[in-house]
Length: 184
Image (cartoon, rainbow, N blue to C red; front, side):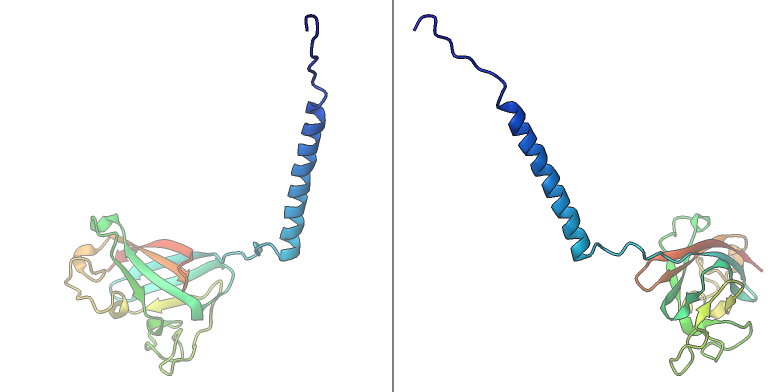
């Protein structure tokens, strides 16, 4: 067997690599076709967003103004207030404002025809469009918290402090957030 040599070459490597590349391209094409045929998730849903201005007066309550953006339906809107770090380590304290207590005309009663939800459970004010204002009387701000409570926005010792106002839908997606400063 002396002098007998087996010759090894690279002839088989090129066809194997070619077959593997064709297999990968075929799998990727099948995945794309399957995705389009089965329907890809709808990514065209755009979250709402508005420019929100919030002011708070211990005498007149909360005023929210939609400064611009799409009209938002009030039937699915949630208004949340959250204390800022100006209240110390109480940022975890939040209050959801009852939609019966939000009115579109200052001085109107909660649950009236001007409320986002009326006494009979129907929708009074159906949308919150650019230029619209909404009002919450001081007594409805923190679910009956006493004005003398240390964390009350109606406590005179908290003048000048701030709190967050967030608008979200019922699933929790926030589409507007701004700070309000507590004034007299």
